Amino acid sequence: MVASLESQLLFVNPIFTAKSSHSKTPLHVHSHIFNLPKFPTKNPALVFTLNSSSSSSITTPRCVAAPSPPPNSEHDSNSVAITNVTPDRTRDRRKIVRVAWEKLVRWSRSWRSKAKTDVLERTKKVVVLGGGSFGTAMAAHVANKKNQLEVYLLVRDPLVCQSINETHCNCRYFPDHKLPDNVIATTDAKAALLGADYCLHAVPVQFSSSFLEGIADYVDPGLPFISLSKGLELNTLRMMSQIIPRALNNPRQPFIALSGPSFALELMNKLPTAMVVASKDKKLANAVQQLLASSHLRISTSSDVTGVEIAGALKNVLAIAAGIVDGMNLGNNSMAALVAQGCSEIRWLATKMGAKPTTITGLSGTGDIMLTCFVNLSRNRTVGVRLGSGEKLDDILSSMNQVAEGVSTAGAVIALAQKYNVKMPVLTAVARIMDNELTPKKAVLELMSLPQVEEV
Image (cartoon, rainbow, N blue to C red; front, side):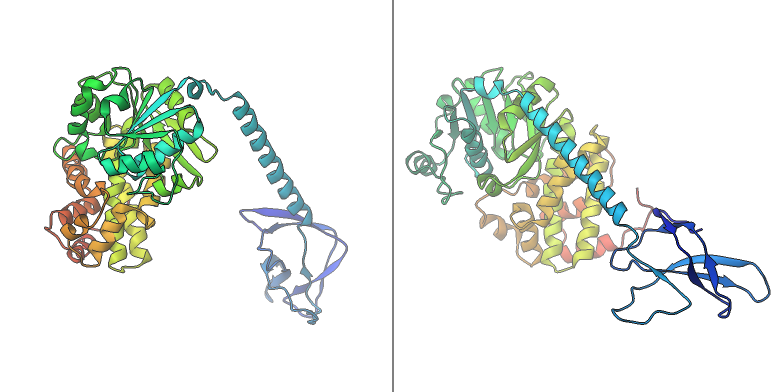
């Protein structure tokens, strides 16, 4: 009798009286099955009425929702409220959910029981290049997985090196966190790289080429490089997957990109985190997954190196834009609109470069974008907030002790957009602001004045 998107069957018995448009003509209903719509549990009452026209003998039944009567209230004698009609359905739904969850848990336990651990068992030494916050956090994470594992952290600052080796803490980035005893800091690249099984590269993108060229003689040609750096080289527009082999003069240097929503501080605190390793070599990606995965760090694998890298680079630029919106107090509506537009721009460029759309909407794309754009721990977002509040870019950068990759990446992004013929208004506006050629306020006015076209 009643059409609905999600309905349930109600068997009405025994006889009840429903309200008719003719007040003197009660309608008796015997043992009927009604197809009723699902209503919120806070308002479960339904009232059945029959409407008829004085000029017609045909009566049209209908079902409407009505609020539950208050306690002790009197009911209309010509109508009936039907309540509490779904206990069986509720029990069935809960059973379905319980069974589904139990299947998921059994599958997970079965998978874990078959998971290989030979990579970690065979690994004797890991080197981390760069003693910044994320490099330090990853060094601590890997070291915690195996006490016998040597984890060398190559740093530039002798004071940081001394702090790590003597007090087991990075005095510059994590003075309140104790590092595992098997983390060893050094300023000697040769000693750090000698005999390493894996190398985690955490040097900022703009300094990577010169740094790697300086240590190339100590790098084994078969040493897998796991890149933690996100960004594009400003002058060449290269990603890390292109920078590392070129700087080491070895086009066959094994490469893996590690990306995803991850703040160093939360990794240090062992909070649940999920990331992605991407490599064209599936066996290598699986090996690195084994090396890094733990009870608080989930590692997924991907073959889409371009998608993972370009999303990781462009999200930093978008985070600056999100920070500007916040710094200017433009509200939540504008923040949502800006980030949505920025996500589309990243997808447009990435897919033109050969990335998979699913990568951009996944953990290393949308996941990383959400974290970097909306959370105050983000360095790039902080730059944007301060710009939106009226501070000068040079003053902001001089006061920071860490690199905000989005500042230098912005110009490279726009050059790529021109190369691939992609319109990127939000990210282009950020690049113009970085070049001091556009104020945040003027940028907002220009973006709001753009043609209103069909969404793609």
